[in-house]
Image (tube, rainbow, N blue to C red; front, side):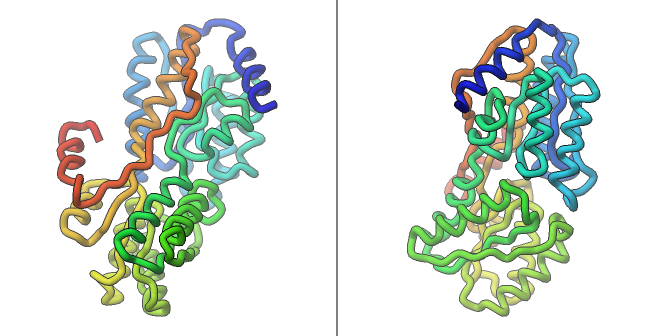
Length: 318
């Protein structure tokens, strides 16, 4: 049935050529370090669309306090503004799926990226899913720390209710448990996301109250740095090891200096670039990608390969 729905939706998308794709991309805050890379990827692909008379418009929320409803409203704005194609993450399915269903009902080509997986693409009738599998990303972090000898880990969740973040933490807990360890979740309010002081204070208190914890997993690069700070403030540096989603210059420096064990890379640039490229080629030329699940991760960055990643950043490739 899912394949049939996807086929019907695809047929609706092919009603007629546009030959100038105005693509709307729903994503995170542009000042969020991870989402700034996704945005750059989308805009770089948009440079091709621009040569063909098209455009890429980025829509992001002001904050993450009301993530699902705010993102759903952005999707509806894209429809109202005459989008020829739409890219969006399925962060909070209960809140966002009706808006995505309206995209498909309007005959607008849709690509789900970053969150939701191929399951969301199938359920909603989207053409493709582009991104990592969130559960597997978290699992990779838990498995890595467990194989390094850490047996009690906590995932720091600063966006409760967001499906991709919940999947990160579930995966982390399962990854560490698979090697005989124990996983748990330190749940914080969404207002803590990106608030270094709030996260550091919460982590400090948590590791002092739970001295058995020897590993922590953070769901983004800003929160990773704050988690490391909280561990240091608790006097636990060297005994509580950290892995986190995504990376920036400071994360790479952490790994090189030994204050962070690993980072899980989902290649945000590629998510934006591939999603926009797929839709631009489809709208203009009817080109489709037969591999509907296009994975951009997870990859593990640690002391063994961080120097190569740093060179990739210098070259503008990471």
